[in-house]
Length: 120
Image (cartoon, rainbow, N blue to C red; front, side, top):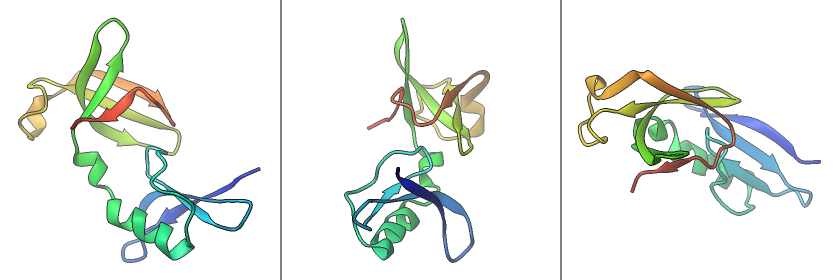
């Protein structure tokens, strides 16, 4: 059974991801969306990976796979330990201001999820 613990950034105590301890005492970093962010490595390296990612994924553009509609542009509204809530963007994500998010069409997804992908 895998052991996973939360990683808090050392400079401000912000929760920025999770680290899994493997059977051979290596460490695998996972971001807040529980996406694997590297191969097994030393603890210091895993912490550095998560510190570098930080909370920036909250400000990035994402695509949500919606059955019957395909990929819909969204922004992350909230991330908890078990779920992420996203809201559709009204402009396709091309303008980064609060008014571009439609809060009436939020979607809650259990984590981990394969329905949410970074918009490239």
